[in-house]
Structure formats: C-alpha cells, structure tokens
Image 1 (tube, rainbow, N blue to C red):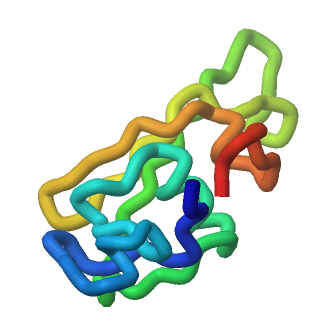
Image 2 (image 1 turned 30 degrees about the vertical axis):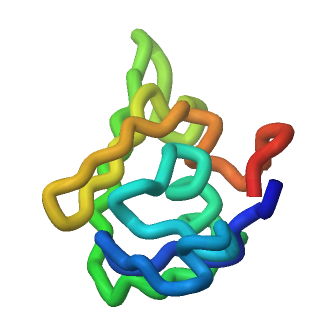
Length: 96
C-alpha cells in the first residue's frame, strides 16, 4: 500500500493521485488532513483551510490547563471532524 506524500486539489486525477502517491482533497480522510496540518503531507491544494478548535472548560479550569474537545477543518465545501488528539503533534499508528 502506498502512503501518500501530498494532498492535491479536489477532483485531481493526475498519475500521482491514481497511483496513491498523492490524494485528492475530496478523497482525503481525517488522518490525511491531520497529517497535512502537521506538515507530514505536502499541501498542493492551493486552498485555504479553516480550523476550528473547541475547548471544554470545567469549573476552576483555564484554557492553558484544558485540552481540545473538538476539532473541525473546513475547506472548499468539504469538512473533517478530527479526533482531539489530531490537534497535537502526535501521529496515530498507520497514518502518514
């Protein structure tokens, strides 16, 4: 199985996308987007991404002592809901 090295524009059907070296944006999964945001995949999309992170603050808590509750990434009418641990620099097993 080929591990992609970049995310290409949506709908791309170049040789690299066909062979799996790249992945088109509209076929990117949550782990692909997390890897792109962390710099582990190159961004060939030419698009802007909007990242929204929601923190849950418990009584007596502060933003600096809390962790992300939800992470949403939007781009070109596409959206991905990332696991909160994707917001950090950790890499889950088996992802690019």
